[in-house]
Image (tube, rainbow, N blue to C red; front, side):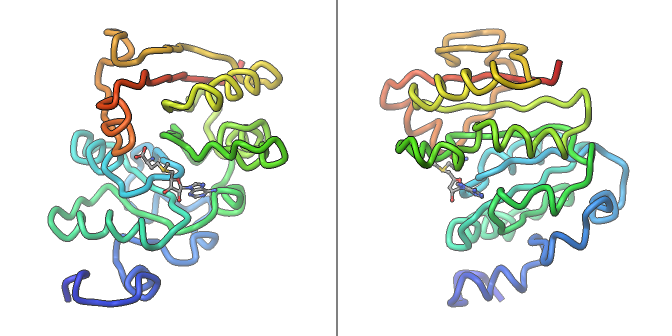
Length: 213
Ligand code: SAM
């Protein structure tokens, strides 16, 4: 049945082969999902999935998992899978706050955060995906030499993210305050939906790549 003919995004997601139900049951066993030993890379807050789907198409020997909180948004990625099913990608509808219950130590090879929600009020700082509280969670699931890549057009969020790194065991490997003008950091860059929209408006895109010292 074609997805657009069905109503109720939650029901559609529950029945979709690309969506992992009860993700906590796969903790420590994610390789079994893909039935190979290829590295697993994770995008948190994947939205409609353009970035992750492009990467999965380009890199068949890497596995990709996308986390998205809202079923209505995730549905858009599933519609893309109907047009072009890919064996090396799966999706999870969940809140990223629970990632340590879903992935074991070192199970993830790389983490991507793209245009994460800014949560501008100070009292919501710990909900920001590059916050120290989230860096602590990422530390628990990312392999020891793994990296985390973060892109945004939001200057305040990026400044916050840089400051958070300084207070942790993480360190910056590379950084750009105008990604699209930086030839070396642009190499292999895959645009996200938000990146396309905001860079077309003339906004500079900020990016860092961080690792643990
Ligand atoms: N990454 C996409 C892009 O760059 O085009 C989408 C960016 S959109 C601004 C942020 C997305 O992250 C939204 O779809 C939102 O629902 C999702 N998100 C925000 N906080 C989340 C969380 N704690 N867990 C899972 N998804 C989250």
